[in-house]
Length: 117
Image (spheres, rainbow, N blue to C red):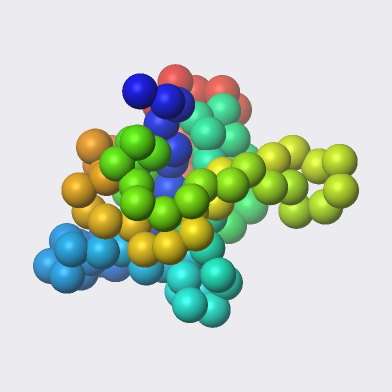
């Protein structure tokens, strides 16, 4: 299996996706249709992403652990700016069957850079 991808999701949106069979949120407040892909992270990138996007926001978040081998759409590693750190992007809907684990996320965890996920 290739390296797992992680996506930080609002728990109610993930629950809704379980009912439809696909998850189509790209990032906080933006859909796959609006953004063109679903933002993901590697394990070492997630704490920084959580701080940047959610800060001390108190909404319920979960980490979707994604097996890229179960995806039927491309995954591309891209940087936000030339020479920047590359992040995985899923170019299509995320089937719930590709999510192999769902972990709770706490804002306290985001304060610990490099925490084992």
